[in-house]
Length: 443
Image (cartoon, rainbow, N blue to C red; front, side, top):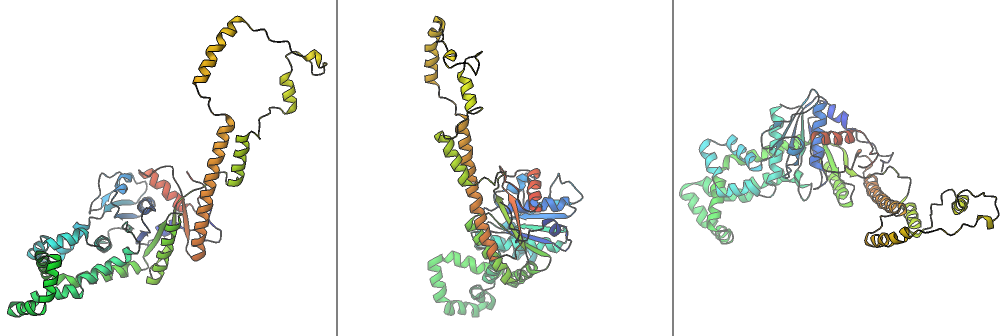
């Protein structure tokens, strides 16, 4: 499978080498190789002289294994074995720890302790919908503010929808700064008898209903949390907006990662349209796990026809043709020009020993299955090739549909590898394929 000449190839090395490129965000649907792509880009950029940090949110921890790090956590760790003048650091987002760091940084010690110990906060920081995506953006903002790395490569969360990555910061910011939270916070802000009167009269119906649905203790935990977080709500909204602007900045580049499959490319197309609508800079599409063949000129139809001919015996190895058959029938020492009668072979003389040994051989042959013939093996290989060519045709058709919808999007194809990437050498191989243009074959 090769790129359509009409589609511009994605030039990865100029993107990585450009000092103006400070953030690369790898996004797409789940299971398409975002983590591997992000790690390969980090390795390639570091070995081309840049100081890089890769932020992953992949819970499988494959990034740590491929980079030779025992474990990743919320602190960037340097990767050993990088060849070149640059540096590579890697980290895995600890969602709860990032949330804790925000509280500790923006609240005095007593209030921070009250928030961290609050049961509602502990539930919110551990698994509230959108918290992971929001904290990924918080960590990105922290890394960029430190200005310690030339390039930050972000592996986005494995969400059900890639769009969650863009929506979550605003969604969580709106929740923490929304009318419901403000309503719960009002009694604590009013204080004293006025606050109690407001709570008892103005909120009696709401709190009574919520208390029945959620439990009275849960509601009190929420109100305590809201009161403690009062001074921080504006900060969540401000940081969410700042991170969103950072994603729109010229120094940021989005790479949409997809597999050559219908669902993955459909979501990639949707993401491309959303990025354009939000004014976020799209660098191109990385098409992962593309299959290829070194015998692409042999079509699936011709391969299947040849396999059927071999299996039905229509293609036979006849040695040197008809002359070869005649010569094989003639006894040794006879002349091809001799009369037919003179070339009639005498019956072979069988020795008693040969007769006695025939039976054991026949019994052995009946107990052992014959190995497949050359024709059978060849037919099997031809059928495998026909299946591979069908896969290539389907992938090309799917990719062409995406290109027809978005001809302006540069594309880089990455040939499929025989196994998973588990070390720096494998990441380098992926980087070479990313930067090498069209895939020339699949492993």
